[in-house]
Each structure stands twice: as structure tokens, then as C-alpha cells.
Length: 50
Image (tube, rainbow, N blue to C red):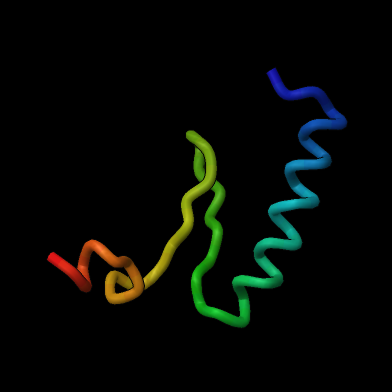
């Protein structure tokens, strides 16, 4: 269980991470089960080196 303080800390980190990623293209999406980092398939190594 995440405490209120823990949740605030997590949201703070996510906010700063989103700001950094905004310049690079990927985004962090909040979903019911947690968070998902969205990127273009070409940016993932497994797609570059099969």
C-alpha cells in the first residue's frame, strides 16, 4: 500500500520524468494497472536487432 507521502513522491518523480521525456518523444501514460512508457517501435532495441 502506498502512503499519501509515497504517492506524492511518485507523482513528483513522474512529473519530472515526463518533462525530460517530452523533448525526446516518449510519454508516460497512466492506466488502471499502473504506468506505461509509450515509444515508437523503432526506438526499441528488440525491433532494431532481431
